[in-house]
Length: 317
Ligand code: ADP
Ligand code: MG
Image (cartoon, rainbow, N blue to C red):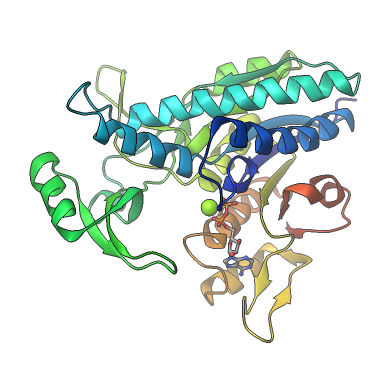
């Protein structure tokens, strides 16, 4: 019998640590650590589809576009999404294939540069909230607004405050390349897809797709991917072993196994921050509601244990 099909969503720490600058060697080193874990899961017999974030890489690429604009034209955000999917996908397929071979479990690994359909009617286009790219002074930000029509906002995160470009974060509706992804899976290939939430595209009347300058949440797109491949489990790997209620408060409590009803209640009560754990819980809830199966949130180094039920936050029907 074929092994369970698991969709894995990798967090930012799988590729770049917060304290690092993002040199190629640094990113490869992090990807390598991730690749060992993924190769082990494949060796355990799981069939795998991997997706990942691209925030730091896309942010860096946007700076490069703007800084070099007097020499070469800046590319759109959608193009930057495509470029980072290629970059991270290559790093992953390169290292996963190596570690599979090391474990004498050679399997082909392949990245699909993925488009994800969104609707121009999505309410997020009215009031974009997702910050992308660098911080600016107010003057720089207003100049970009004037010159390029960017929507800019003053944002106040913990460490750094300032002005940033904000873009819409619409709901993912469909994985355009789902047939290709399923064919690869049927051929026994480990697939990396929908990186950075996928390239947001809108369907035109003639059936073609056009790139949209937006950013899709990777955990939500990961759910659409799980749906597209009919996954048995949705495994979200981040930098915490479990989700908590009363997070960062004296009475914080780690969640082991909770029903989807309870997860919804906790989400509504505001236990999970919207820029981080919130979308993961939301995506997990969607997966469990849709499949009747299980979603798991844990840290990268606990992936195998969590799939064996030893740790992590499990959301069940
Ligand atoms: P990723 O790159 O994996 O998407 P995020 O930073 O977006 O990572 O999300 C993981 C972070 O979510 C954790 O490091 C933690 O600080 C934060 N977080 C917010 N609310 C919670 C919660 N209730 N329980 C656990 N972590 C939480
Ligand atoms: Mg995140």
